[in-house]
Length: 307
Image (cartoon, rainbow, N blue to C red; front, side):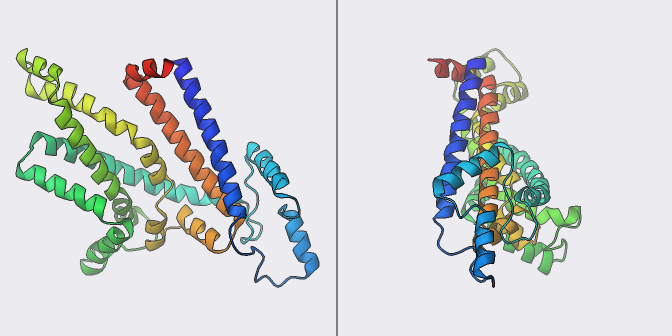
């Protein structure tokens, strides 16, 4: 197990390094001038370029950025005065994380329930209802879903607020908007996995032994069918916890999405780099945790990795 974990950690570190390198080069290749539009003298401009390291060669800038990252320093924003990227991420991530936790709880719980019910009632009305929900969830973009939720529950029926983030009632609609796609995907995957498991020989053996139906469903079907779902939770958890940029913009939530979009528009290289690397790190960490959990759940994975 230790060898398996060490291998996954090494792969994660290499992946993060590749991500940082690629993003650094791409950001530096972005068209436009980050200081364009600022009324400054050539002397002030030279000082600004020196402050942000633009007076050095690209390799020197890269080495300096890597050194700063190793110390956990993302630098200072080029558009928000006296605001470090670390501070902006700290302030905004709390909103995105809180919203993501609520969206995940909604998506995973209802997704598993819908998938299990659909598989247990295959070919019946309940199955069709769950399948339709799953199709709608994977077909409708999140910004369309957010707009629909705002119109129905906020404007037409007046049940919930349509914007801002001032309390629990304000989190319901954006949580559903973010989590609906994940709910649909988990539901479809769980249904397919349940239907596959029910055909296995150990299920037939359990039935022949006279084990109760509920015990077979819980102990054998659900526990074995949920394994494929765990494998896809890594990127899902990371993306949801870091927030959905469009949904945050639609519901006026001061999360990472708002600042990330503005950083691209403003050519704020430091903030674009910092938020992209932070999101990438979070995604890689989530995948690493899921890989380790998958190795614990399914010992065959560890055996295959050691070959």
